[in-house]
Length: 132
Image (cartoon, rainbow, N blue to C red):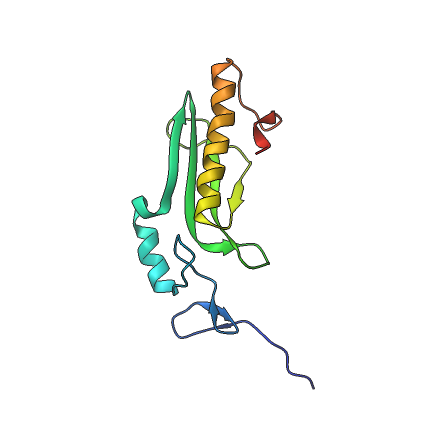
């Protein structure tokens, strides 16, 4: 029987593949699950960008762990909220692999939303705003 490579949890609780952590800080440095949990407690650290444009809020955050199946994983995401209390959000999510990409993506989404607001139009998922 042939031995297969499998993902395992190390003593720190981080899933490893060939001893590489799937958790990274905002700048791509490997961290363990305990460090990730501590950083996630810090709202200032998690927030990459937040802008209110008219009735919309564009929020970009560091997730603490990656989404996706190929490394490097997407560890940041941007969502557009439609209400001041941040309870209604677009079902569109933009994800990024690096902090710099997240900052650029956040600004691009803000610029698109701003154009809609300045032109007196409503943002919708069918709008051209989703193309970044």
